[in-house]
Image (tube, rainbow, N blue to C red; front, side, top):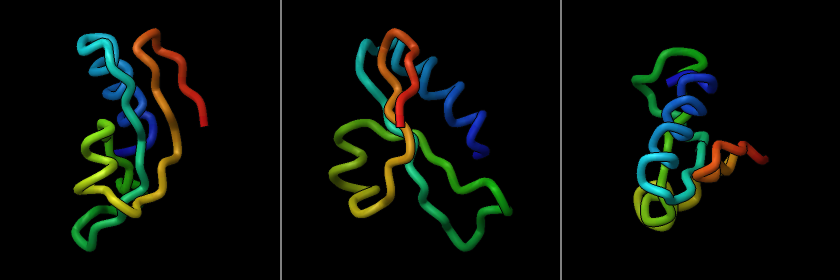
Amino acid sequence: MTEQKAIYTARKIARVTGECRYIVWSPEPCDEHGQHYQVASDFDCDTFFSGAKVLFYVSPDGRVEN
């Protein structure tokens, strides 16, 4: 997904769950140009996205930090 879509999605999920979310850069061969952003939880960052670059932190109150 795009960076803006990832931030929007992360804010929405963080608000509903009350837990922070991360925007990670994880290029996949099948992604279109500019579509390499993913939303991840703490668990996702430690497992599936291990080693991926975390670009933004999104708190439950909607703050986005890098």
